[in-house]
Image (cartoon, rainbow, N blue to C red):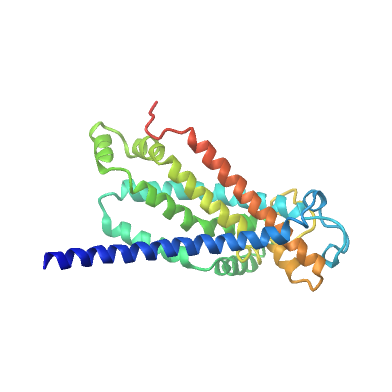
Length: 288
């Protein structure tokens, strides 16, 4: 009888291993096909003119110019929203894991609430912000886009940091308290320093969502062919530029959309690789 149970468990294990491998291969294949398709269509069109110039007259009808305004605008928006979200998300995640350490029910309720916010489509955030802007009489601008995107990525960043902070051993928490450490010292001198690699990963994940989202900024940032010089001016982004160019019936303009998508992929890749290289030299257990 025990042999039947043993072989049954082994068979079950093998089945799930195969399923997990198939799922992993499917994800890699789908991602590879998306990247391959974009690069195949975008790289031949990508040129120095496209990435170094703003749109000129008739750009969306096949005229001259490039997408420099969208590149700079996307970086302004993504970095601004990520910094704003980080200033809110880090204290929230630390409070959740330190000040509420012994209150599991409250933790579970807060995590459920954050998960619900994470699951809301970004277009809903954009529509909500647009409604607030109309009520307050605020015009579309870079600042409105930063605030909207920050609100959108805060649940992503908080949950990412939360999952990392949960891995810190409770013995470290109790040892800190027994040595007379305040909750502030536990938060920023122990927990934060132990989890810097995971926190950076959460930041990079949020940055990728911020720079690649079009729906959240569709109603709030507006669109312009120039580079903004203040927070109150409208701003162009790469996702919106891709959307408008793909909507054109002119093949040349559609090809430029794939060039813009290629630039977007390269930016995200550079940011991700840079973050990984920085983390390689970091030792989480080093205390000064």
